[in-house]
Length: 388
Ligand code: LLP
View (cartoon, rainbow, N blue to C red):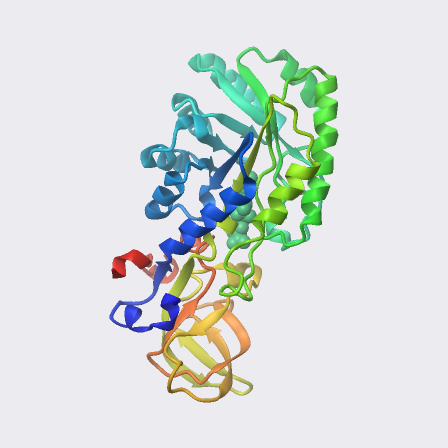
């Protein structure tokens, strides 16, 4: 039985807070690993989706690697106990200090996003005397058809090296004395529901690989990033993402040579559905068209609806027995911004002050994107096994 059907679990706890279902997290990672199967494959968990220490401990216990995008994420990975040899460091704007930190920890590889960055890596590798391994992030010009803010693989996005620039990259890589080229990296965006987009990525990846092999580069590592989407509309019915369809697309279509390893960087699909933002209803305020349902959680705890107008399923955990009828609400937070709304014109069971709501699928890009705007406190996190 879902914990969400028993509001008593939550009634005595101060809201808002993030709630994580540990069993679902474990089941999700297990399903992903089963769907991928055995082979020269490695999943790196994208820390940016959720870097809560308890979540990271769970991820680590399944043997996943770490995909980091800041020096602090690299540090967190080391602190958590991830093997440096399983840590990747990506991002368009790595500072010298962050690069040196990665070098000191002798992480597995840097995903290099520009020729300018590559020159800095080469120089720092020479200065520190540490051999640096890097993969070239290629911008494959594939439109992932997701929200424009989380589309990363189009030519005009800031990420990676365009196919045209690759011609300039080749002589530069050949001239390197310290940095070691180990492979190619791609990531076309996030919350991608149309698997044919990954097939387009594979086609580009095969082309790039062929070109580089023609130049006699060895490419032991192919990294196709993350991006697999989840069902925000029906988190209960579809709590596990389509890992099988996703992995099969790469396994069937990507040319993988005998000495190559295929890497994935999954974030959202591993952690989104296990998390909810739990909030209390402060006021029901009648308005002209709808009623405002004002919660004690807002864009400071979950910014996705305000930033991307994304929908998160909202469940009134208190309404099961007593509250009849259905009412149209604008579900809003307490922050002084009109964008601080979780949903507009949403039909929900009649709701009263004090009711407890779960805003679902908040496990990815929820807690990590929290802010202290309006001088609010960062909400705590609570885990299902805290209730045992
Ligand atoms: N690898 C790279 C290079 C990335 O930039 C990302 C996400 C991932 C992997 C993981 O992608 P995932 O499997 O989670 O889709 N804040 C936005 C999402 C931003 C995603 C950024 N990059 C949101 O709330 O939808």
